[in-house]
Length: 51
Image 1 (cartoon, rainbow, N blue to C red):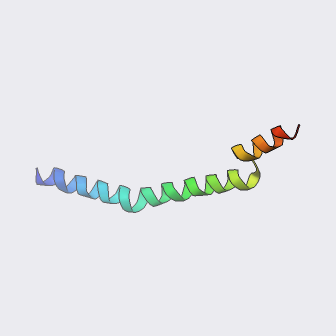
Image 2: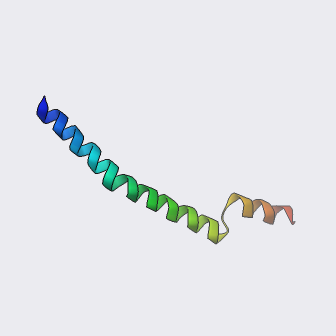
Image 3: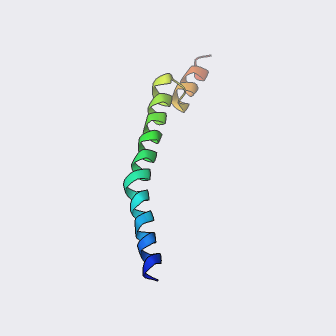
């Protein structure tokens, strides 16, 4: 039982301290790329409304 709890704590710590910041960073980079490349929804709507 103690081994299971310890394993769970190690996995939860790994996810919280390693995977979560990586996931947030990658999503932020994708969001910035979409925004600055002009592929955002607002850009598409503005381009469409000018026609």
